[in-house]
Image (cartoon, rainbow, N blue to C red; front, side):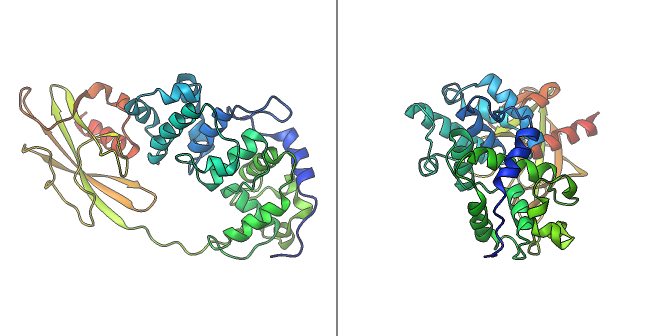
Length: 348
């Protein structure tokens, strides 16, 4: 652990935050009324592994439609999954609904990290962020922005992810007892707008004088990251089956990747291209040269596209026949929405 732990971190950072805090729809301004725990919780779940700019329109749509835990708890599963489509990491949506129902049953969102950790979809970071931001509890909140700020403050040369216990310990040492929620949000804002990954704006930083990374002359070298391991490559085929200007959509299994979402029929995603072996029905399938490429957290996917048209009264697999002209309203996950747009271009 570095011995040169800066002592004057919280005061200049909070002064800067009071003047320059980002205006975000889920955030209470410094000195304003207490934050709404529902809005803090919803935003923190949506922000897991997702950029602020992507979250804002979803957050505004959700809070207009479901303004409270009770309202969200009453939502239909399929309705919520469709509203979530495009935001990614779909297990979050299932946990979001389960958590809302549990909080509605209890009557309020718990205030402590320990209690919050018992709710669906809430891990260590999210519990700390909610406890600090929504309830003013002292908690150590470390996201990617905070990691970057702290590794630069201390010029921490240990590579990620192994350095994370040290980063958390250092963050603990600089987190104040008072205004812990504002401190956490200030660290996030500093990392997002000034202490950025590639071109930190050090001359604007309120912590420049305390920053060991700045003193090295190369703060952008921190955090040090271990070499990336290439993601596995998988392949699949998506099937566009038309009948009466409608296309067949199916529900993916409730558990697993993209669980419970509407989707185009597809076979398993395997280590080699499956071709037409998993077609949902015997038909005159046309296999296109074009492919959809998509990156998931743990693997990359290349998907071939196949299309067929069947007569109006032909028996077909179970599913929904969705109007092709309204396919954008089906709430398809991103990879299937990409395929639908490509099918649309090829048929135009």
